[in-house]
Length: 156
Image (cartoon, rainbow, N blue to C red; front, side, top):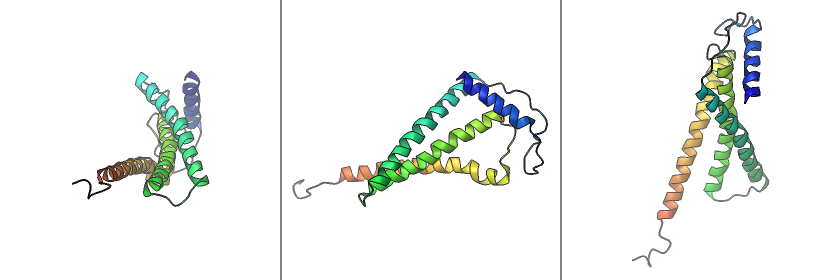
């Protein structure tokens, strides 16, 4: 944990001390912003995002690999699981990276330019919301399947 914080501080210092002639940055990178004071809850959230990154990328990567290896046209629920694994994989990669970037820059600057602002930042929310939507669709389809009566003439 301490090495992660030290590397974040070192990365933050490197980003703020480099000179940049790029006109799309929101603040000049040539002056130093000082050090960031992080609260204890920020360290807990950082640890959570590190766990999400490693477990999410590994688990969803294994699901994607197994579906790629053994894919056959099957029920819709299997396709939904494949989509869920794909969007969770993307979400568990992008969300921790964006949180780490905001910690490194102390929420004070944006070095990814106009395209990064318009595309990268919203993609985190989009992937997370798509994952939630797929979970809701899966829950609804399982609920509909459970409400079906297998033998309607015997149910009377």
